[in-house]
Image (cartoon, one colour):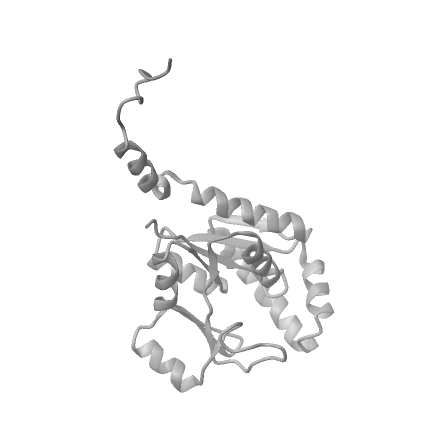
Length: 212
């Protein structure tokens, strides 16, 4: 069985990363979200095992000590981590593992697994990002200003990613990300096992002798 790819999608807070990931999961077969672990509090409407695996600081620390994370990072005072075993289960089953993580985590994944595919999502400009953060009414004004300051640092880091998609119009951005994923699936190295099977079936007729 051909192993799946590891696909990382990162973006500054408010750039539309989660919305794009959800759309991608509904549009593309064979892609599975790798659910992260976090120490942050569960928000209204979130569910454990669906949005995140919610653990205590001590539990998270124990997992770090046991090297259970492919990557982990502290973001705005909370820890987030990607489980090695969760990702391995997905890709070994032939599916693509979708990692919706921050740029720190994405950079760490790339360092550990160079063949991982990194896609950065950008807002069209600072004012669009500010408006989205205020419109979602999730954070205080002070938190929003802090996120905006952090966003420009993250955007600078996203220049290291393999692909950049500007989320100016959501449908277009989703389509671009979908095209990246589908193109990656057609890479020669990923298709090699299928090519080998076809070549192994060579017999009478491949030279055209049976054509009339």
